[in-house]
Image (cartoon, rainbow, N blue to C red; front, side, top):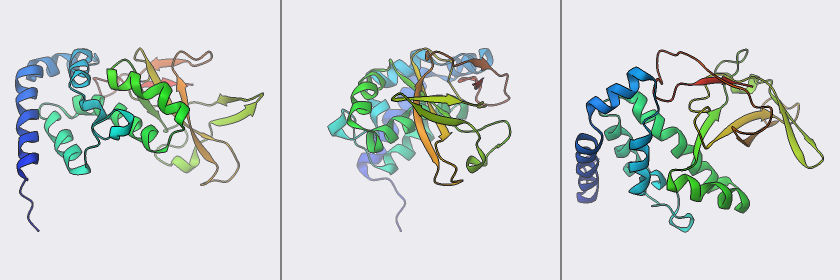
Length: 212
């Protein structure tokens, strides 16, 4: 198997490498790592170039790129810091899930704002008592009068505190251990959501908080 880049892939790698060196830079990333500050300016530059929608289908306003182009993207933007790359990628793969599996209403509500850079996404799966065992979650969602009511605690919800963030919450909607779970989109401004920042060793740029 030939693992060399095609001409298109090489051009993409060159473009991203130049962008990271000239438009972002080592000092900018180091500053945001040290201050635990989200790289908002860089995030907006990605949005302005349409790169946030790399895996979003063209029909939904994205670029519809293939997984190899995305892998190149992830590698190059991590040039100076994995934490920086994670701060960008977390929203991207959640938006891709909405584009591929969300309802038409969810796509219309969230994707345009995401592609413009105004909306971010946070993944909220891990819990204090479950760790990486997703099937062991205890957060529950109950349907009442047409609305889902959630109760529970999550940790390491990267970026959940950032303005304009929609938290993708994994919650239990039935007793079945493996099939009784659903993903529910919860804007972080929703009444009852309590987000507290944690001082973590990694993911410093997105400062993962604790939420309930």
